[in-house]
Amino acid sequence: MVAEAQLEERERRNTELFEQVQQGIDQLKALQQPVTQRAISNKIEIPHSLLRRRPHILRVLQQHSQHQIFQESALSAQKVPVVALASGLFLQLQ
Image 1 (tube, helix red, strand yellow):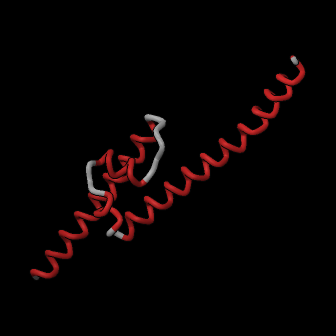
Image 2 (cartoon, rainbow, N blue to C red):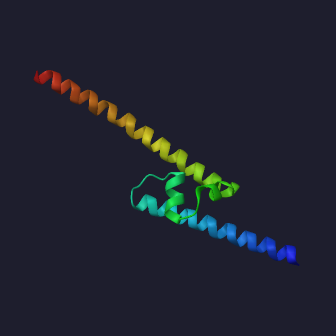
Image 3 (cartoon, one colour):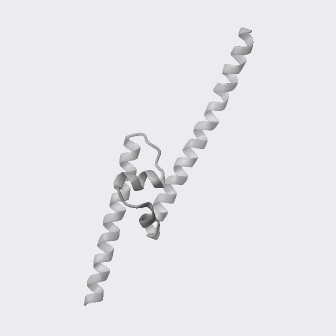
């Protein structure tokens, strides 16, 4: 009985933590801020080290961090033609 109650309590805390992480991610996205593991940790005011100890939370953090890296890479790739175009216009003006 005691072990069962402890297991239920652990599951409740894990669910609560997962929901907090999701809310932190949603808030960062709404504010158009980078969604990084550290930003999520800071937003929900829970130490980064604690979040990384929970495998299901770590997967969510890694997924969103990878998505952020992909988005930043895509933005960088989009900026290259603009820079090249601006350089070409500058050369034409000279």
